[in-house]
Structure formats: C-alpha cells, structure tokens
Length: 340
Ligand SMILES: *Cc1c(COP(=O)(O)O)cnc(C)c1O
Image (cartoon, rainbow, N blue to C red; front, top):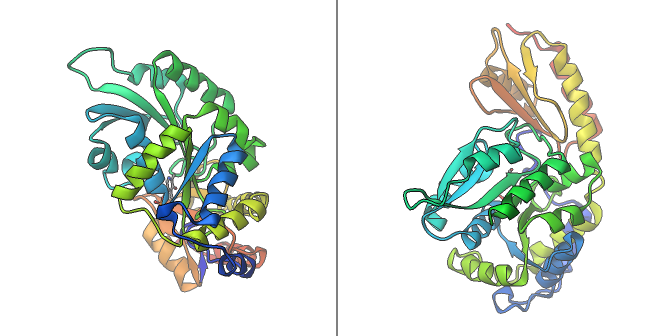
C-alpha cells in the first residue's frame, strides 16, 4: 500500500533505528536520560529558546502550553480549523478549564485584525483573553504557511494586550523550508512552540515543547499529572535527534512531489478546487459522480490510501516513506481513473 493518509504513518529508517538502538538512556522522570536531555537542549538551541520538554504527542505539547499560559475561566483565540480546537478531544476545556474564541481565518491562517477583534474587553462578564494560538503550517488549510510579517503583526497585538503567543508547529519545519525561514525567527517571536517529530520528520513518537525555563518547569509538572512522564524515553529521543540532524532539508522533496500530484489532479473532470499546494499536504474537492469516499475506495483498489476529510474533500499527505516511484505509480492510477 502507498499510504497518503498522513505523514504520521512513517516507520523509522534503518539509520534512525540504528541510532535508537544505540541510544544512551536513563530514567527521564528523574531527569537522568541523557538522550532526552540532549534532544531538549538541541531543539531549544535551534530555536534560540531557553528550554525544551519531550512529550509523547503534539496534542500533549499543545495542551501543556495552553495550560501553562492560562488560568481557569480564560479564553483562547485561534482559527476555527485549529488542531487545538477541533482535533484535541476538547482538551482546552478539560485541561485548562478555558473557553475558545474561534475566529474565521483564511485556510487556517488568521490576521492581527482578527485577533484584535476577538480580544475581550476588561469586563467581569467576559472570559479573560489570555493566549493566541497559531498553527504553521495549517493542517486543515492544506499545509498553508504564514507570511512571517503577519506573525510579527499578531505578536505586536499580543504584546499590547499582554497575551501569550503559542505556536502549534506540528509541521513548522515544512513552513521553514517552504518559506526559507529560520527557527530563530520563530523562537524570538513566540512564548512557546510545539514541534512534532512524528510528522514529516519521520520519528515514530514524540513532540517537543519549547519556552522559557520557568514555563518549561511548570510544564514538566503538568506532563507528569497527565501521565506523560516517560522512563527510558531516550530510545525515542534518539530518533528525534537523528531526524533534526538529517530529515529537515529533505522536506523540500515532499513539497515538490505534492505539486506534481496536484498537476495531475488539475486535469481531471471529477476534481474541483485544489487548495494551493504550499507544502506536503494536498486537499482537493471531488465532485460530479464521484464522492470523496468513492474516490478513496477506487484508489484503495489500486493499492493507494487517501483520506476523505469532509463531504467534498480528499486529503493526501507526502512524507518520508513515499518514494518517487510511488508518486509515478499514483499519477498513472489517477490518469486512468474515470468519474463513473
Ligand atoms: C498532528 C498534529 C498535532 C499533534 O498531534 P498528535 O497526534 O497528538 O501528535 C498538532 N497539531 C497539528 C496541526 C497536527 O497536524
């Protein structure tokens, strides 16, 4: 099977597995796993941030980030399609006892004006707005990327209103590669950043939360009570170190492959709007006689897995385990697909 359902489906490469097997490990709950400590320091250094916290998932790094920036009864501003809002099981309500003010951005991206409008006035009737969460790349936006100048404008609004600024950077490295930006730009701008190692970077498990020392210290306690304190997690951290050192630049290949597939889809009469392909995610409308489910079924018969993500849309995600040959086969299959 050629699996385009998500970039979470990758399995470790032989070189990554080798790094994992050879990892130095200890008990990370005691702070004694050298590989976890190395990964946290490496990620923090890349972004010019003070400290890092290795967690089992990006959901956990986001939830800890939001928890540490809020008090019960606060409100979180984010785009209506944000992962933190629609894909984390209502975690903001459960963990932070906070509400969400979803704003309607464009392909998952919001603006300084939208943030400003969404901030509640100082009024006892209103929840206290305390944090803005951005997502870059934006998953439901089809891997769309912010212009960094817009992020800086949002930062100004946050500063003026004393709001924390958190980044869900599950696919931040895709954005950095696509926009030719640096991790340090982001480290200087955000109060906290969550990066996923388990998406395009090809690691089996893990995410890192980055921020100031005190913030991460607070986050370490939250991670413990959420049950995310792992013991010899260095076997996983070693995969993360390997990925940060070897798998970032190759993301450009995934972006190229996604554009190639989009060019094939463009010519098909059963394909409607294709969201602009900025990184490794392709979201397109399936119309006419074919539904997204039916399209997915036809592809599956040919050994290709894609995901119907709405009543009208299909998503395909490029990643480390999709080779050039697999893309060629996919293009051949799409080319001979008929809508009836
Ligand atoms: C995958 C993802 C996460 C984290 O998901 P986990 O499965 O919990 O690691 C967070 N944000 C976005 C945008 C994602 O795509």
